[in-house]
Image (cartoon, rainbow, N blue to C red; front, side, top):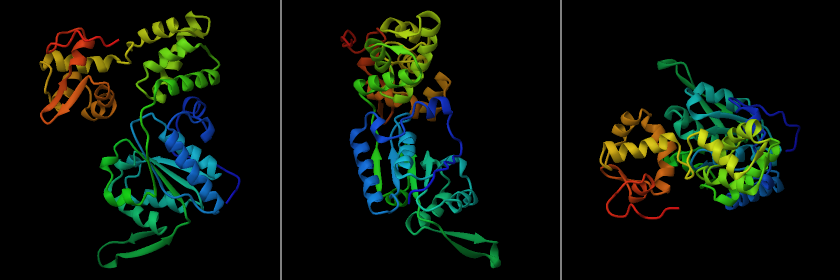
Amino acid sequence: MTRKKTKETINRPDPEFEITLRPTKFADFVGQERVRERLALSVKAALDRHDVLDHVLLSGPPGLGKTTLAYILAEAMDTNIKATSGPVIDKPGDLAGLLTSMEKGDILFIDEIHRMQKTVEEYLYGAMEDFVLDIMIDQGPNARSVRLELPKFTLVGATTRSGLLSAPMRSRFGITNRLDYYNISDLITIAKRSARILNIDIDDDGARELASRSRGTPRIVNNLLRRVRDYAQVKADNKITRDVADKGLELLDIDRYGLDEMDKRILKTIVEKFSGGPVGLSSLSVSVGEEADTIEEVYEPYLIQEGYIKRTPKGRVATERCYARMGLAGTGEAELNLQ
Protein backbone atom coordinates (compact mmCIF):
# COMPACT_ATOMS: atom_id res chain seq x y z
CA MET A 1 0.00 0.00 0.00
CA THR A 2 3.08 2.23 0.08
CA ARG A 3 3.21 4.86 -2.62
CA LYS A 4 4.50 8.33 -3.24
CA LYS A 5 2.39 10.84 -1.28
CA THR A 6 0.87 13.83 -2.93
CA LYS A 7 -1.03 15.29 -0.01
CA GLU A 8 -4.09 17.28 -0.94
CA THR A 9 -6.15 19.22 1.55
CA ILE A 10 -9.20 21.41 1.62
CA ASN A 11 -9.06 24.44 3.91
CA ARG A 12 -5.52 23.61 5.01
CA PRO A 13 -4.48 25.62 8.10
CA ASP A 14 -1.87 28.35 8.08
CA PRO A 15 1.41 26.58 7.24
CA GLU A 16 3.80 28.51 9.48
CA PHE A 17 1.87 27.97 12.68
CA GLU A 18 -0.28 24.91 12.23
CA ILE A 19 2.04 22.81 10.09
CA THR A 20 5.49 23.87 11.30
CA LEU A 21 4.65 23.48 14.97
CA ARG A 22 2.60 20.32 14.43
CA PRO A 23 4.49 17.09 15.09
CA THR A 24 4.41 14.76 12.10
CA LYS A 25 4.96 11.43 13.86
CA PHE A 26 3.84 9.71 17.03
CA ALA A 27 7.28 9.97 18.64
CA ASP A 28 7.09 13.78 18.55
CA PHE A 29 3.51 14.02 19.80
CA VAL A 30 3.56 15.07 23.45
CA GLY A 31 0.89 13.96 25.91
CA GLN A 32 -2.25 11.83 25.44
CA GLU A 33 -0.13 8.71 26.02
CA ARG A 34 -2.96 6.17 26.00
CA VAL A 35 -4.55 7.63 22.87
CA ARG A 36 -1.20 7.75 21.10
CA GLU A 37 -0.40 4.18 22.12
CA ARG A 38 -3.74 2.84 20.89
CA LEU A 39 -3.52 4.64 17.55
CA ALA A 40 0.08 3.55 16.96
CA LEU A 41 -0.93 -0.05 17.69
CA SER A 42 -3.84 0.13 15.22
CA VAL A 43 -1.57 1.59 12.54
CA LYS A 44 1.05 -1.15 12.97
CA ALA A 45 -1.60 -3.88 12.90
CA ALA A 46 -3.13 -2.46 9.70
CA LEU A 47 0.26 -2.18 8.02
CA ASP A 48 1.21 -5.73 9.01
CA ARG A 49 -2.03 -6.99 7.45
CA HIS A 50 -1.54 -4.78 4.38
CA ASP A 51 -5.01 -3.48 5.17
CA VAL A 52 -6.69 -0.11 5.49
CA LEU A 53 -6.90 1.55 8.90
CA ASP A 54 -10.33 1.35 10.51
CA HIS A 55 -12.41 4.52 10.81
CA VAL A 56 -11.26 6.76 13.68
CA LEU A 57 -13.26 9.18 15.83
CA LEU A 58 -11.36 11.75 17.89
CA SER A 59 -13.31 13.80 20.40
CA GLY A 60 -12.43 16.42 22.98
CA PRO A 61 -12.17 20.19 23.51
CA PRO A 62 -10.63 22.43 20.83
CA GLY A 63 -6.86 22.71 20.48
CA LEU A 64 -5.81 19.37 21.98
CA GLY A 65 -4.39 17.76 18.83
CA LYS A 66 -7.22 16.06 16.94
CA THR A 67 -6.19 17.51 13.58
CA THR A 68 -2.53 16.84 14.34
CA LEU A 69 -3.27 13.18 15.04
CA ALA A 70 -5.17 12.89 11.75
CA TYR A 71 -2.10 14.06 9.83
CA ILE A 72 0.15 11.80 11.91
CA LEU A 73 -2.07 8.83 11.00
CA ALA A 74 -1.70 9.68 7.31
CA GLU A 75 2.07 9.95 7.69
CA ALA A 76 2.26 6.67 9.61
CA MET A 77 0.11 4.86 7.04
CA ASP A 78 2.13 6.48 4.22
CA THR A 79 -0.99 7.61 2.45
CA ASN A 80 -2.78 10.74 1.24
CA ILE A 81 -5.12 12.83 3.35
CA LYS A 82 -7.98 15.10 2.34
CA ALA A 83 -9.27 17.47 4.99
CA THR A 84 -12.56 19.32 5.24
CA SER A 85 -15.08 20.24 7.93
CA GLY A 86 -18.67 19.28 8.63
CA PRO A 87 -20.33 22.65 7.83
CA VAL A 88 -18.55 22.85 4.46
CA ILE A 89 -20.22 19.66 3.19
CA ASP A 90 -23.75 21.03 2.87
CA LYS A 91 -25.11 18.68 0.19
CA PRO A 92 -24.58 15.04 -0.82
CA GLY A 93 -22.89 16.03 -4.09
CA ASP A 94 -20.02 17.61 -2.15
CA LEU A 95 -19.47 14.38 -0.26
CA ALA A 96 -19.71 12.31 -3.44
CA GLY A 97 -17.03 14.45 -5.08
CA LEU A 98 -14.66 13.89 -2.17
CA LEU A 99 -15.22 10.14 -1.88
CA THR A 100 -15.02 9.32 -5.58
CA SER A 101 -11.68 11.13 -5.89
CA MET A 102 -9.99 9.02 -3.22
CA GLU A 103 -7.70 6.07 -3.72
CA LYS A 104 -7.41 2.89 -1.69
CA GLY A 105 -6.10 3.58 1.81
CA ASP A 106 -6.57 7.36 1.64
CA ILE A 107 -7.74 9.23 4.71
CA LEU A 108 -10.69 11.61 4.66
CA PHE A 109 -10.50 13.94 7.67
CA ILE A 110 -13.72 15.73 8.64
CA ASP A 111 -13.35 18.29 11.41
CA GLU A 112 -16.41 19.22 13.47
CA ILE A 113 -18.13 16.18 12.02
CA HIS A 114 -21.11 16.63 14.35
CA ARG A 115 -22.08 19.75 12.35
CA MET A 116 -22.70 17.87 9.10
CA GLN A 117 -26.14 18.06 7.57
CA LYS A 118 -28.30 15.07 8.45
CA THR A 119 -28.93 14.24 4.79
CA VAL A 120 -25.19 14.22 4.09
CA GLU A 121 -24.48 12.13 7.16
CA GLU A 122 -26.85 9.41 5.98
CA TYR A 123 -24.88 9.07 2.74
CA LEU A 124 -21.80 8.30 4.82
CA TYR A 125 -23.36 5.22 6.43
CA GLY A 126 -23.02 3.02 3.35
CA ALA A 127 -19.68 4.57 2.42
CA MET A 128 -18.18 3.77 5.83
CA GLU A 129 -19.63 0.30 6.21
CA ASP A 130 -19.76 -1.17 2.70
CA PHE A 131 -17.67 1.36 0.73
CA VAL A 132 -20.54 2.14 -1.62
CA LEU A 133 -22.33 5.37 -2.37
CA ASP A 134 -25.99 5.33 -3.45
CA ILE A 135 -26.83 8.45 -5.46
CA MET A 136 -30.39 9.43 -6.39
CA ILE A 137 -30.77 10.58 -10.01
CA ASP A 138 -33.70 12.77 -11.12
CA GLN A 139 -36.87 13.27 -9.14
CA GLY A 140 -40.43 11.99 -8.98
CA PRO A 141 -41.42 9.07 -11.29
CA ASN A 142 -38.03 9.21 -13.06
CA ALA A 143 -36.02 8.96 -9.86
CA ARG A 144 -33.58 6.10 -9.68
CA SER A 145 -30.67 5.08 -7.49
CA VAL A 146 -27.16 4.62 -8.83
CA ARG A 147 -24.64 2.71 -6.73
CA LEU A 148 -20.98 3.76 -6.92
CA GLU A 149 -18.26 1.44 -5.68
CA LEU A 150 -15.68 3.24 -3.53
CA PRO A 151 -12.10 2.22 -2.76
CA LYS A 152 -11.51 1.23 0.84
CA PHE A 153 -10.68 4.40 2.73
CA THR A 154 -10.37 5.62 6.31
CA LEU A 155 -12.63 8.29 7.72
CA VAL A 156 -11.11 10.26 10.59
CA GLY A 157 -13.73 12.38 12.30
CA ALA A 158 -13.00 15.06 14.89
CA THR A 159 -15.62 16.57 17.16
CA THR A 160 -15.73 18.89 20.14
CA ARG A 161 -19.24 17.70 21.02
CA SER A 162 -19.46 13.95 20.63
CA GLY A 163 -22.90 13.93 22.25
CA LEU A 164 -24.32 15.60 19.14
CA LEU A 165 -23.23 12.71 16.91
CA SER A 166 -26.06 10.38 16.01
CA ALA A 167 -25.88 6.82 17.31
CA PRO A 168 -25.70 5.28 13.78
CA MET A 169 -22.75 7.50 12.91
CA ARG A 170 -20.89 6.89 16.17
CA SER A 171 -21.31 3.13 15.93
CA ARG A 172 -19.58 3.01 12.53
CA PHE A 173 -16.26 4.21 13.93
CA GLY A 174 -14.11 1.24 14.85
CA ILE A 175 -11.58 3.29 16.82
CA THR A 176 -12.87 5.92 19.26
CA ASN A 177 -10.63 8.08 21.43
CA ARG A 178 -11.20 11.11 23.62
CA LEU A 179 -8.47 13.69 24.18
CA ASP A 180 -8.27 15.38 27.59
CA TYR A 181 -6.63 18.60 28.77
CA TYR A 182 -2.85 18.48 29.18
CA ASN A 183 -0.90 18.68 32.41
CA ILE A 184 1.70 21.39 33.08
CA SER A 185 4.75 19.20 32.43
CA ASP A 186 3.53 18.19 28.96
CA LEU A 187 2.74 21.82 28.11
CA ILE A 188 6.24 22.86 29.21
CA THR A 189 7.69 20.26 26.84
CA ILE A 190 5.48 21.56 24.02
CA ALA A 191 6.49 25.17 24.72
CA LYS A 192 10.20 24.29 24.62
CA ARG A 193 9.83 22.29 21.41
CA SER A 194 7.91 25.10 19.71
CA ALA A 195 10.45 27.64 20.92
CA ARG A 196 13.23 25.66 19.25
CA ILE A 197 11.28 25.58 15.99
CA LEU A 198 10.58 29.31 16.19
CA ASN A 199 14.22 29.99 17.05
CA ILE A 200 13.51 31.74 20.34
CA ASP A 201 15.45 31.18 23.57
CA ILE A 202 13.27 30.18 26.51
CA ASP A 203 14.27 28.99 29.99
CA ASP A 204 12.45 26.55 32.27
CA ASP A 205 10.69 29.26 34.27
CA GLY A 206 9.56 31.04 31.12
CA ALA A 207 8.13 27.82 29.69
CA ARG A 208 6.39 27.06 32.97
CA GLU A 209 4.83 30.53 33.06
CA LEU A 210 3.39 30.04 29.57
CA ALA A 211 2.21 26.52 30.35
CA SER A 212 0.46 27.54 33.57
CA ARG A 213 -1.62 30.13 31.69
CA SER A 214 -2.53 28.04 28.66
CA ARG A 215 -5.66 26.38 30.07
CA GLY A 216 -4.30 22.87 29.50
CA THR A 217 -4.33 23.38 25.72
CA PRO A 218 -1.33 23.04 23.34
CA ARG A 219 -2.85 25.41 20.78
CA ILE A 220 -3.09 28.13 23.41
CA VAL A 221 0.45 27.62 24.69
CA ASN A 222 1.72 27.93 21.10
CA ASN A 223 -0.37 31.06 20.55
CA LEU A 224 0.94 32.61 23.74
CA LEU A 225 4.50 31.66 22.80
CA ARG A 226 4.21 33.48 19.49
CA ARG A 227 2.89 36.63 21.14
CA VAL A 228 5.49 36.59 23.91
CA ARG A 229 8.15 35.95 21.27
CA ASP A 230 7.25 39.31 19.73
CA TYR A 231 7.63 41.00 23.13
CA ALA A 232 10.95 39.27 23.82
CA GLN A 233 12.29 40.14 20.38
CA VAL A 234 11.59 43.84 20.86
CA LYS A 235 12.25 44.31 24.58
CA ALA A 236 14.18 41.36 26.02
CA ASP A 237 17.00 40.44 23.64
CA ASN A 238 15.04 37.52 22.16
CA LYS A 239 14.97 35.51 25.39
CA ILE A 240 11.84 34.45 27.27
CA THR A 241 12.23 34.29 31.04
CA ARG A 242 9.50 34.16 33.66
CA ASP A 243 9.55 37.94 34.00
CA VAL A 244 9.45 38.46 30.23
CA ALA A 245 6.57 35.98 29.86
CA ASP A 246 4.68 37.68 32.69
CA LYS A 247 5.05 41.13 31.14
CA GLY A 248 4.20 39.89 27.65
CA LEU A 249 1.07 38.12 28.84
CA GLU A 250 0.06 41.16 30.87
CA LEU A 251 -0.20 43.05 27.58
CA LEU A 252 -2.62 40.37 26.37
CA ASP A 253 -4.78 40.77 29.51
CA ILE A 254 -4.10 37.16 30.52
CA ASP A 255 -3.64 36.88 34.28
CA ARG A 256 -1.52 34.37 36.16
CA TYR A 257 -4.43 31.93 36.37
CA GLY A 258 -4.92 31.83 32.59
CA LEU A 259 -8.08 33.94 32.64
CA ASP A 260 -8.39 36.32 29.69
CA GLU A 261 -10.56 39.40 29.32
CA MET A 262 -13.69 37.49 28.27
CA ASP A 263 -13.32 34.95 31.10
CA LYS A 264 -13.21 37.75 33.64
CA ARG A 265 -16.12 39.53 31.97
CA ILE A 266 -18.23 36.36 32.22
CA LEU A 267 -17.41 35.87 35.90
CA LYS A 268 -17.93 39.54 36.73
CA THR A 269 -21.27 39.56 34.92
CA ILE A 270 -22.56 36.52 36.82
CA VAL A 271 -21.43 37.95 40.17
CA GLU A 272 -22.34 41.61 39.76
CA LYS A 273 -25.28 41.72 37.34
CA PHE A 274 -26.98 38.49 38.36
CA SER A 275 -25.98 38.32 42.04
CA GLY A 276 -23.95 35.16 41.51
CA GLY A 277 -26.66 33.38 39.52
CA PRO A 278 -28.36 31.30 38.46
CA VAL A 279 -28.40 32.93 35.05
CA GLY A 280 -29.45 31.36 31.75
CA LEU A 281 -26.99 31.00 28.89
CA SER A 282 -28.95 33.29 26.58
CA SER A 283 -29.09 36.08 29.18
CA LEU A 284 -25.39 35.68 29.89
CA SER A 285 -24.64 35.79 26.17
CA VAL A 286 -26.49 39.08 25.71
CA SER A 287 -24.87 40.60 28.80
CA VAL A 288 -21.27 39.92 27.75
CA GLY A 289 -21.81 40.45 24.02
CA GLU A 290 -20.70 36.99 22.92
CA GLU A 291 -22.48 34.18 21.07
CA ALA A 292 -24.04 31.55 23.33
CA ASP A 293 -22.35 28.70 21.44
CA THR A 294 -18.95 30.37 21.86
CA ILE A 295 -19.46 30.78 25.60
CA GLU A 296 -20.58 27.17 25.95
CA GLU A 297 -17.85 25.60 23.80
CA VAL A 298 -14.86 27.91 24.29
CA TYR A 299 -15.04 29.63 27.67
CA GLU A 300 -17.26 27.54 29.94
CA PRO A 301 -15.32 24.24 29.86
CA TYR A 302 -12.24 25.83 31.44
CA LEU A 303 -14.22 27.93 33.94
CA ILE A 304 -16.17 24.85 35.03
CA GLN A 305 -13.08 22.64 35.13
CA GLU A 306 -11.29 25.17 37.34
CA GLY A 307 -14.31 25.48 39.61
CA TYR A 308 -15.24 29.11 38.93
CA ILE A 309 -18.79 28.43 37.81
CA LYS A 310 -21.15 25.47 37.80
CA ARG A 311 -24.13 24.52 35.70
CA THR A 312 -27.44 23.93 37.41
CA PRO A 313 -30.91 23.18 36.02
CA LYS A 314 -31.74 26.87 36.51
CA GLY A 315 -28.57 28.25 34.91
CA ARG A 316 -24.95 29.20 35.61
CA VAL A 317 -23.88 29.92 39.20
CA ALA A 318 -20.69 31.49 40.51
CA THR A 319 -18.79 29.39 43.06
CA GLU A 320 -16.81 30.38 46.15
CA ARG A 321 -13.66 29.99 44.10
CA CYS A 322 -14.97 32.61 41.68
CA TYR A 323 -15.69 35.09 44.51
CA ALA A 324 -12.28 34.45 46.05
CA ARG A 325 -10.45 34.88 42.75
CA MET A 326 -12.18 38.21 42.21
CA GLY A 327 -11.47 39.35 45.75
CA LEU A 328 -15.15 39.50 46.69
CA ALA A 329 -17.08 38.09 49.60
CA GLY A 330 -19.15 35.08 48.69
CA THR A 331 -21.02 32.94 51.18
CA GLY A 332 -18.36 32.92 53.83
CA GLU A 333 -15.36 31.23 52.19
CA ALA A 334 -14.05 33.98 49.93
CA GLU A 335 -10.94 34.32 52.05
CA LEU A 336 -9.87 30.84 50.85
CA ASN A 337 -6.23 30.82 49.74
CA LEU A 338 -6.15 29.87 46.05
CA GLN A 339 -2.50 30.53 45.28
